[in-house]
Length: 440
Image (cartoon, rainbow, N blue to C red; front, side, top):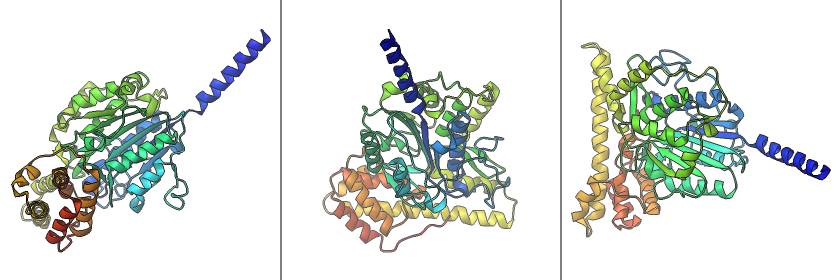
């Protein structure tokens, strides 16, 4: 009897220690900068507030954002960032882990892998210190293209993200992990790449072929406050009991209310149905949780009808500002010039990429031009695609530009029809004899 009692106590102690050692970790990434891209950083700030209120300590939340909004000259409410019309400030308290030039794909990967040595002297130096009992939540929001997502400088390829995930799994960096991605063609970051058996559930704002959408244009700030997929899942997390709502239920809500693009799910779909949102976004019971307001939800849903594709956001903002400007004013004249310049930039980029395709196909596949430029093919030739897009970055223009990103599927298609990367790079060199810089 005494031996059984000792065993029982030891078991309770053991499992108690195991339970208390389990923790939640999160990495939040806004991959852009500038007032036109306001929504990405406001998305991340809102996500932080949700995790913080739900009990995840700041020590376990790692934030990447350029941090050029709060004190931006264009900000009419200095120090305040909002994510919905007439919304509350979401900037206060956000950890300043990695800002400005530290928001890079390389640093993001090192943080995920817990590489403290590599992050010494960079930002806060915080990295994921999660282990086999911990749950990890990753949220990324910014521009994207087929097989990649953008950062202020540089891009993160789908293969590099998934290689990092595989290392995290082999190094026992998590028990279960959830990934939310807001970006154009974000499904291509995971489709046919993310395994279904490594305890990861993921959702994306769009499938592998379409744009994601910005929403909530704010006339006072003259920019879009949020992105449709992101504000939908976060406004759901604001009011739901996350200890009861499953990940799959949140996916269904987000899928239904995101009527601008096809919200997708990947990875271990059974995990999505079995686990609650609170297991990844924090499960603390919060008496201050916002009460569901049906009228506000309907109003926000109505406002989201102003949503525009990401690649059109900059033009849309300038057009709205132009419509509101006084007749014959200097402001109106400047905005007219800016709009013409944007339209010209988009035309130049489109023409150059199409010229590259024409040149690459001119050897023996000239009849493929329409097929290559008209539709998205599934990306399978990742090495070729990475090689040729890096040459575009080197010779033509920066990849982290929404007009460039919107046309990179053509580069992917050239690889998919069997052209060698050296053939495509030769065409790039011939077309892009002068590198163009677009300053916004």
